[in-house]
Length: 355
Image 1 (cartoon, rainbow, N blue to C red):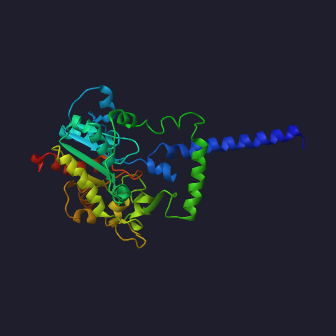
Image 2 (cartoon, rainbow, N blue to C red):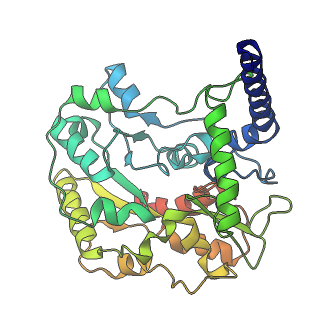
Image 3 (cartoon, rainbow, N blue to C red):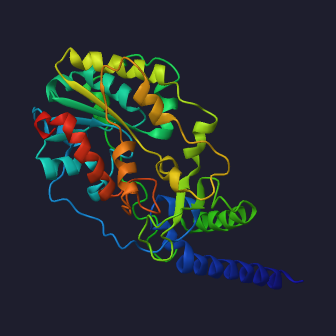
């Protein structure tokens, strides 16, 4: 073969691969990439739910914006947590508290730190005294509570205003990555898509190493054709190998509560329910797995010096009434309906007159 023919063959192969890449991306993969987190992680497209998302007219304040403004003001509530706390618009429970209860809410997100350590950093920097909230709400997703708060006793962390300003907030992830004819994420996403399809073929209960799929005994979602499908994050099953040490978790939360009590501030803690745990009673094939005892342990652990807002109870009650789309089918997080159900209970601990 001459060098000219060799180059022509190589270019032809590359051209065909490029066309195949473009066809796979624009025909299938782009759709899943632009949907919610379980679509991207599991390479599965879902139909649109009949429940529409909501958009709040008013929004909570963010710590990064508060610091940048240079103003000194107080808030009713300081929220610190992970993705369930840092959601946007219809996925933001702080926004729900602002719009439906008229509360002034400041959310503090410090990259790389869980909520208790973040609270300690705010206290050390003087920002907690400056903000002077009546209530602090700490949140962690259920599956991460043990690793974050149940391994050892968390020590206060030295910090200052400049460090917190540098670490507060984060740029929006994925912005622009899927735009254009040949976006930068295309090839990698296509490779993952093919791998995930092979993985699902070998392990039918999983769409990918990160996402599992199973069926429910009743239609809890409004996505046409997928009403009884449950998609959930594989790490929801960590409770089987890493049981909760409720005593250490409780001690860490009590330490935080004492710090706040000395300043006249109430501490509320809630764990956002894992999707698998929430829908567990309705899963048709549990594969012999026992129910996650997390909420039972947290309810029963003695000596709480903080308010434990039980996120599971009102959501399970809503499912018992047949409520649909409490969590989104294709997301690990709750919908605005789930937020409303929980926050209408949560506010009872914030506004005593609502009891």
